[in-house]
Amino acid sequence: MPDVILPALDEAAAIGWVLERMPSSDTTAELAERAGAIVVVEPVRGFGAACWAGLQRATSDIVCFMDCDASLDPVALPLLVSFVERGDADLVIGERIARRGTWPAHARLANRVLAAEVRRRARVPLGDLGPMRAARREVLLGLGLRDRRSGWPLEMVLRAAQAGLKIQGVPVAYHERAGRSKVTGTVRGTARAVKDMGRLLRDDTSSFW
Image (cartoon, rainbow, N blue to C red):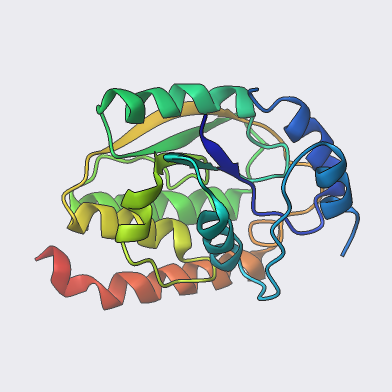
């Protein structure tokens, strides 16, 4: 059974719903432990830092990632995992399908621009750089991911493309999240994420030409 990594900060409003639907500086950690999850404490703040800490702790052959804010439903994870198990893909990304008003316009636009840039540079046919993902643990460790902030999702795709891995996008439903996002919830947070990802694109320019 795959390990599922849920990077979480102040997600007490969503953690119960997420864990109940899992196949097989608030109370997030306490609620997660109470529900049977293993809590990995990462003192360094940052999306990438949380994901990296979880990846280091994981022991299963296949590892999944998804946001812990109730915007993504864990029941979609087996579909992503099935592509990896069959060998149809090395990295599977859930491409978010959202109803109008669910996704802030500034975040939707930023994601669209970044996805288009990835398609152009890396020739990877992705329409979204979504946080729900599945891949083999050793494959991810072998990518040498270094970003510990908002650039982690983009770096994973770029490194996978450079390594010649098969990347597959799979449509998944995207719901209104519980609480306010630390990234897409504000224009400032989105701008910070775009800055992190823009830096990665500049650093990797020579790798795709």
